[in-house]
Length: 107
Image (cartoon, rainbow, N blue to C red; front, side, top):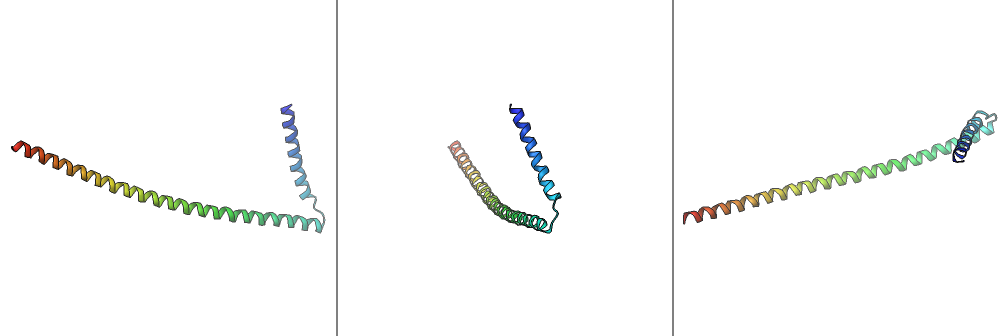
């Protein structure tokens, strides 16, 4: 029964597609052409509005991505600075330890 329902839905969808095509093919009067043109222009305006919204959203996302990349680079630079400072502290401590060891061995 599920397969039958699926096939029936496919037939309805195909029939609706054919009907829409037949409607466009059967435009015979100026009034019908005006109505069709009005519909198409409405669809065009709707598409342009949607495109504008999507473009704006894309630009906002790109700006946000750029901000995040900038913050990431700043954090990487800060981390590199901290790591260099840490390595320097380790070197100083190793030198101090070596001096103590050398000083102790002279006694």
